[in-house]
Length: 114
Length: 114
Image (tube, rainbow over the protein chains, first blue to last red):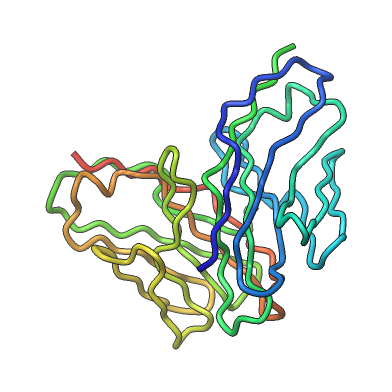
């Protein structure tokens, strides 16, 4: 079956620190990979995605590279801000599936202090 | 105006009551989803619908039912609510296409069953 494993949180950082949130996956074939973000009191929104091996998704200073050899899609940001405090979800969709639905990781809370 | 709306935003009810959560979207998408979010468990799929005549069970459908009244409306019902259905519920939509569809989430309904 398909599954996504994320590092447990909360991750606590000071403003301008470097961020890494680890994500690994198990899936048949080569899935598409996503990072979603949930700000306090809101629904999830897409942060970035990658559809094939070695693709790099990027948005708002965040980046993640699709690594087929390590089945990973780690999220990184060079300098976090207080406004980045949120819960981050890694997710996948199987590529060749007639009825494709998202499989989510359990989420990682990020807390950034001034 | 929000593209995906959910009503109510908050609801407190008692064990055994019937509850309906409603979702509407103005994105013109044909695919709609219901998820529940529990602390430490991430998001889990309850039901999904790929068009008006298509309804599919997700990972945790027991105790829930859905109705796709129109392309833009997808309702989730709890026929007889129980306390372990206390959770945050999200509706999402996506467009027709490849398995890389991005899902767009509503703001969520916080349901408490006493």
